[in-house]
Image (tube, rainbow, N blue to C red; front, side, top):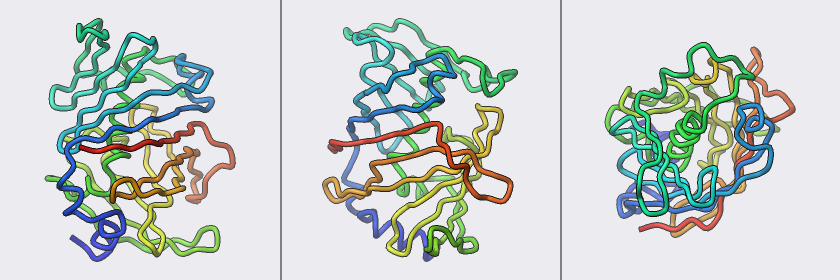
Length: 240
């Protein structure tokens, strides 16, 4: 591990504390114009998310209807819509290949939204400890000046075994080790360039989580557009 990653891990609670956690549960709210464009919801929607920490598995309760949940399981490359009694209502594998031919305004099917939000939220909830998992690579890059601050940048490369926005992403950390921004291209969304800003970090049982996220388009000069398309808030994080 490089010095920046060591600093960031310590600031977020440390690997020893993280090793004691097998499952996370959070209350989340999603909003912004992106969801209406994709044909999902034009109103803020809430869900309880349950995520495994050692494998890419996450459950959203509810999903689209009060008596339905969505499960993303990377080990099977599967997204499933399940009923309250556990019965499977709909299920698909290999869904990442289904986004081909879409543009920025094409509506998605419910399971396509589920795949996108499933892998994204699992990545967000396990960052930065995810960067120590098998196959992950990271290196420190040049520092970045923004908002009157100097942020240290960590370039991260993902293995094929982990579903993520793109195989290479850049994370920006303040001097105190807290994540401030992350850059990526969204492979399932025609490769659009994104700058995501995070903040309002809180300590939940010894682990620091950003509780506010805003997704902006990223300009060619690496600045971010003023408007944002996706907003995410989390609260009530529990662990076991």
